[in-house]
Image 1: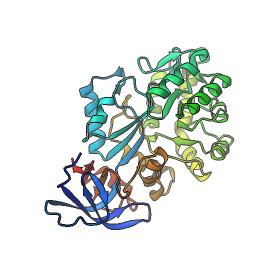
Image 2 (image 1 turned 60 degrees about the horizontal axis):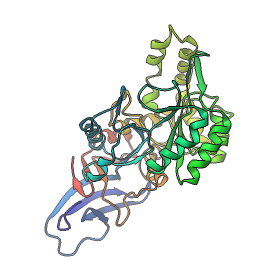
Image 3 (image 1 turned 135 degrees about the vertical axis):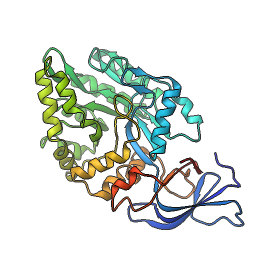
Image 4 (image 1 turned 120 degrees about the vertical axis):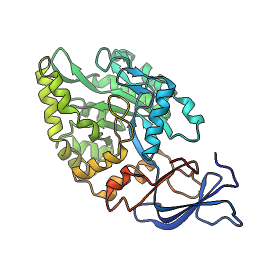
Length: 364
């Protein structure tokens, strides 16, 4: 943490909330204050537009396309996110033990969902616990205890018997598993590309759906009514045409389905937002996708039709509230990013931080 004698002054426009804009904040001992410290001598001043550190609510530190990675690779992933302004990560499933990152004051803070839980041979090799429905409650309880208040299921995947995307779990299994997670104080999210797993998961009480490309005019009202959040990962959905092309020869039905989901992706997200479904920023970095793309994902939400201030909020104020972590509040850890201009006016600014501050220390 920062030395108590070190004082940082952030001057310009401090975006405490979407409309709560202040002229400056001070950082003493790594924490935020809106009162100038008396007698401060060693003061560093940073000027610009300040936001809470960005949130990537779907990220995988410690994972690449082939499975778990060594600690030095995980460190590079975390540093890439940090230098791009992402200072809070919900790690949506990883086979790696990244608890050592919690001891590094210079790296993003991570909220872990444990390891993915998937149906046998129904997910990417080396990523998940691969189990059968009768084991689901047991494994959900295990990962609820290992994680930081979240559990990650694989809700659908390619079913080789049908040649298309298909739900992985019977309704009764997910109902019992989600009830167990909630009993243990954990929320549950699920990877879902297609349409047919969504009703069972929502009616079972799930808290969030990742990707959510299969939302329709029938299921969107159900999500809104139950308050189920979505993390669309549009920067990842952009890979669907390439995946479909690779699968055309062996699984043409699946490939065609993936293309249709891709083609309506923006309409799906905008319709969900318009209906009142909570939408948050996530990139799906760490599988086949690069880290450091949270700003680009905010831009994708704007392209989908979400107002810029709401898209920024989905990566900052609202996202932190959803995950139970502070923003630029009095006494909070000073995790913030400073930009040249107002991100609410042009979200492209998020791609070029002027300064990154972690625990009160300017690191980039």
